[in-house]
Amino acid sequence: MKFARNLLTGALAAVLASAALTARADITIGVTLSATGPAASLGIPEKNTVELMPRTMAGHKVNYIVLDDASDTTAAVANARRLITESRVDVIIGSTTTPNSLAMLDVVSENKTPMVALAASARVVEPMDAKRRWVFKTPQNDIMMALAIAQHMADQGVKTVGFIGFADAYGEGWSQEFGKAAGIKGITVVASERFNRNDASVTGQVLKLLGASPQAVLVAGSGTPAALPQRTLKDRGYKGAVYQTHGVANNDFLRVVGADGEGTFLPAGPVLVAAQLPASDGSRKAGLDYAAAYEAKFGKGSVSTFGAHAWDAGLLIQAAVGAAVKKAQPGTAEFRAALRDALEATKEVVGAHGTFNMSPNDHNGLDQRARVMVKIDKGGWVYQK
Image 1 (cartoon, rainbow, N blue to C red):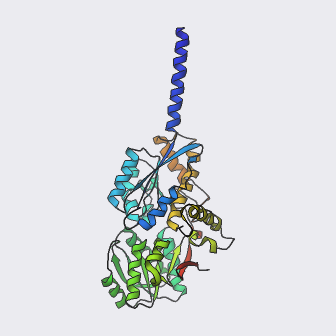
Image 2 (image 1 turned 120 degrees about the vertical axis):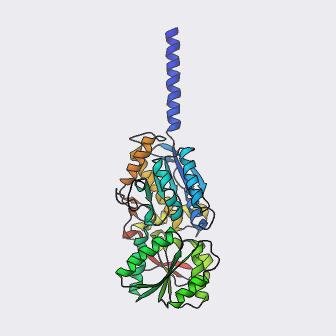
Image 3 (image 1 turned 180 degrees about the horizontal axis):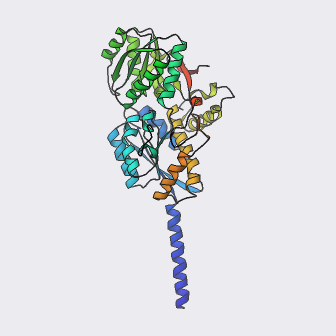
């Protein structure tokens, strides 16, 4: 009788242990995005896209914990700490902007938690060091886009350019990378100005640009705040070409810039004009699939490149989970390390923005196929063949 009771107790303990293991086996993904504040036009489609991400990966249930950092670096850091220490996430997606993502590097590296950033600047993953080995990113690096702009300018006969960018890491990164690209193409930057994301006026900076008489102006901003310099340039009678970065590739920017945006050139991920791409383009189907999924839930014409960066982050994590779960259980330090290693080893992951091939020295993994040049024409995006 005693033996039977002990046997029953042991069996019950095994069942309870198995149930506990199953609970711990859930994968938890923490997300911090700029759903409010100056970068909200980027963060909202990213947040919406989380709703489209898979709820199971490699047979494991996936839980998403989504926080808003309000476009604030301090809040982004606090969110990252909360997700890691309180929610014990296996990986973090975010944040939306370069300053926020850079501010999170210390937190994720100290806690050895992989992060897939949705920010554009290469500074998020370069130069590779002990901190950045835990960080990956899905947006195209700014040097790739800067070279596309410089090439287009050169083809248009542009020799002199005025530059105005955000007074933060995004603007500074673009200033450096475009300076390199312009030099390669024999283009001279004749004036360089800065503005803040929440500025109400840039008249002084624009007057200085106009005083240098550039043939073209590059605005290095993201989201709706990037419309301000362009509208001011037009108000002041500027007749030269205006270029923007891939940081404005959404319909909110089109709405705010209005008629002043007509004729603007910018580089973008192929998802922005997926329907206009030739059938032979490898990104066409992936871009159309994402657009169809997003617009089915959020309305026709609602898709943006920023949501697609989040989509691609989900695809990368899903691809990496399959390898990581073979080495450790989710919810453990060993799993987080295995997931980091698997992300770094991902190859031929076809996303909405291109095909990702990661390596120990490249935590972005995109090549020149991940960008196209587009023009704003009649209030829409037109692929430049």
